[in-house]
Length: 222
Image (cartoon, rainbow, N blue to C red; front, side, top):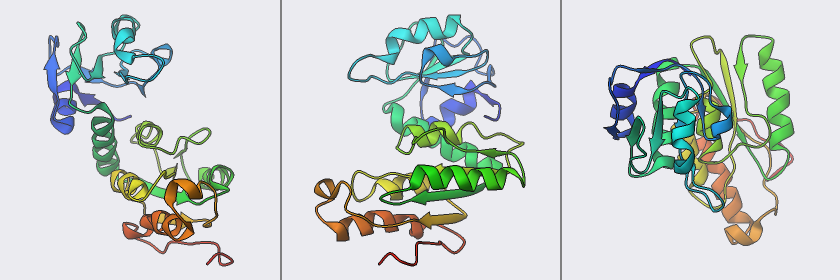
């Protein structure tokens, strides 16, 4: 991630600083949601999950070197407190990618996203430093966390976008507007969640609404 002061992060996310001795302190390390991945200069993002609440690990994260915590409530250590942690994380990713001007390639489809994403990334890596997710980090949490790994040296950012319904890919694409969008296919996976294949096609097609270059798709797919 590019270096940002806590004052800048608060401005980007609309958050309120709490227990911050100096708003010019800098986040220079990775943005993480697992306290075990904290490194000096990290921003620890506290999500309240079904099994664990990241806010309970905030103090430990700061003790291990995190500059601050992005949280939904004060946690007794330096924190930017926001109304919606997921939305704030997305806003931060959007701001960072916008500043970098990195070439963003995004892909979606009912099948083959992860393997195709890996192939594209490995090819682009030959052209310049490339950031892409390990596995299928393709939702409103995984995608911003991946995007925030990009820095001033990053030439290409390859992202996978998944959807659980209409509107999801539109949201993700707005966070990291792709220069190139790839729609692989429209299948029947998760058809029950969407209400029909036409709805799946509509959801996947949202990727094409914000791209700035031609958006390839599988010619064998309708």
